[in-house]
Structure formats: C-alpha cells, structure tokens
Image (cartoon, rainbow over the protein chains, first blue to last red):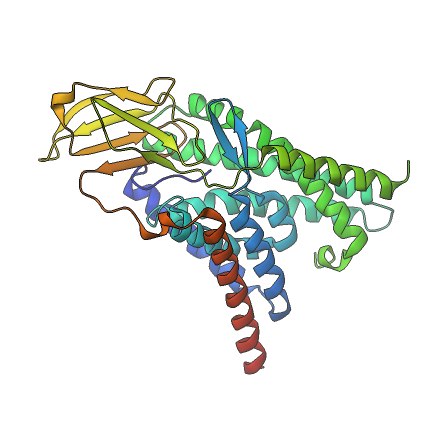
Length: 204
Length: 138
C-alpha cells in the first residue's frame, strides 16, 4: 500500500507532508513517558507487517495493521507510522522520501478514524460483559481501516492522473484478502488484550 | 465450546493461514536490465508486474518508446533501440526505474531477514534511548 517515488505531483506531496507533520506533532504532544514502550512495540509490528504478504493471482498484497494500531495507539499512530515507514524506506526501498508524508497520511488517517469509532463503542460498553461487542467493533475497524486507506490512495492517485472509480475498484479488489485477514486479526488481538492486559485498552 | 477454547482455535487458524500465505520479502517494483529487446518489470516477492506502463528513454532522456508489459511482466521492443533509462509504473502507485550504469544499493546484497532484524534492533534502541533520557530528565 505504499505509493512510490515519482508518481505524485508536488502539491499533493506538500499537502501530504504538512498533514503528516501535523499528525506527528499531535501524536508526540499527547505521548506520555509510560506509553513509549507500547508505541515502540506497535511500530515494530507495523514495520514487520509489510513483510507479510498475501499471494493474489500474479501479484500479492501485504498487511498494513493500521486498524489495530489505531485502536491501541490513538494519535501516537502518526509517529509510529512515520518511524516504521522511514525504516521500510531505508532498509527495503519501500515508498520514497518525498512521498513519505502522503504514505503516513494514507495509513495513519484511517487508524485515527478507527480509534474514535472503537473508543465510542468502548465507552458505550463499560457497564456490561463486552468481549463480543468490542471484538465485533475491532473486526469492523480492522476492515474499515483498509477500505479507507484504499479510498484515500485511489483519491490521491486520481489527482495524479487516472479516474477514481477505476482505481478504487482495482485497489479495493486487490486488497480484499488483506481486509478480511486484518479484520479477523484485529478482533483476535482486541479479545486477547481484553483477557490478558485490559489496561492497554482502558486509556480511552 | 468455551470462550478460551474458541479463542485458541481462532488464533491457531490465523497462524496457519499466515503460515501458508506469508512470504519473507517486501513488495517493491523492480525493472530488470533490458536484454535482447526485452525488459521485465516484477516485484521483489517474485511476482510479475502485469499491464504496467513502460517508457523507454535514450541517453538525451528523450522518450523513444511506450507500451505495456504482457502477462509475464515483459515489454518487448526492437533490440537496436538500446534504452538508457526504463521507467515502469502500474495503477496501484508502484513505480520503478532502471538506468544504465547505475549502481545497485549495498543493502540489496543483505538477505531480507537481516534487514528486518536490523530494523527491529533500531526500534528497540530508539525506544530504550527515549525511555532512558525521558526518565533521566524527570
């Protein structure tokens, strides 16, 4: 889900960079000292997720994990994606330096939307046994994050040249297996955390 | 079936699913060196770039030919053209450039797992240093 160097025009790159810097600033400002290890671990997972890819016909797509990262980190997902994408760029030549801001926005913005969606469900479910409800919310967030990411990606690429509908269809269809895997994975991680370390999800 | 058992079975199924589908390489487009009037665009997970737009440029960086890769990720052209630079791009935002005489990255020589381990090591060091200096300043 990375856009490569040389595909986008300068105004899109600048807009992406400014948005990413704003998101990172908010994330860093809201980060408490005790949250640093949690952010580092999730960043490592985001970094490695790009190596896990699903064969799809003649090509393949890789995991993103932005839904579950958003649920766990909130606004800190912006600095987490920035660091993960810089390392992927340096070590795997994924994406590019000028397109870094756009790629951060592409993956972190859906994560923030999922964070607020999950937070509202979490606050609604405080009074009851809510494992199934929160597992379902995480399932939806995991899939929704991929859908939003693909729509942003199609929109950004459309601004560069092609038609939105054609691009959105191609990108969403190619990411359907990832959408299903991420939805299931997000649900399992949230259910697991609720049983093993619920404090991680009680900071809402 | 108890909740715990259901959870364990679900985790096991997911691990098995990932074990079947997981590769150990990233997903970056690569244009191979043109040979005998053919140039191949592929991804570094081994899959080929089907239907990618390919542009050939001469040494003055003038466009000499454009076209699309076939189902094998190959674009054919007249061998006499001898392109100096080849650019491939697909609809999903992947783009790759091959240029005559360009040196490959030294990191490409390292296996993928070494680079992944290096990245995780850097993250651990970053996390540890940040925690150390933050706790020191408090």
